[in-house]
Length: 79
Image 1: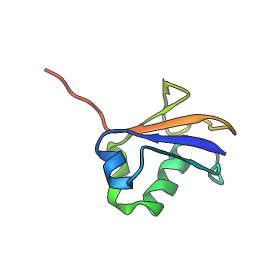
Image 2: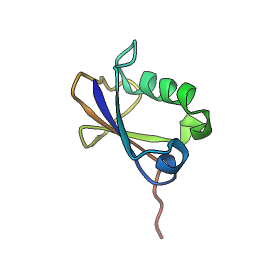
Image 3: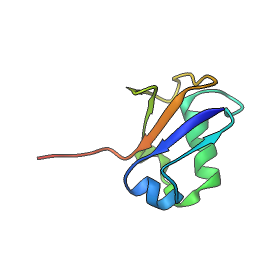
Image 4: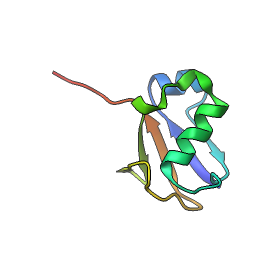
């Protein structure tokens, strides 16, 4: 199992701030985002989402392992 944290509007769209879920069939960030988009189509397009694994920004091919904490959020802009 992994812990998935949702921030900002993503949490509102999913209806939760966090939950536990099984690893995706291909245990990487891109596969997890695809699974989440299938479960929560309202978060699409997923291309705009950012992901962090264990508090480190991640790319699509970043591996995810049992016990990891994964954060899903939208990019933040300032200025």
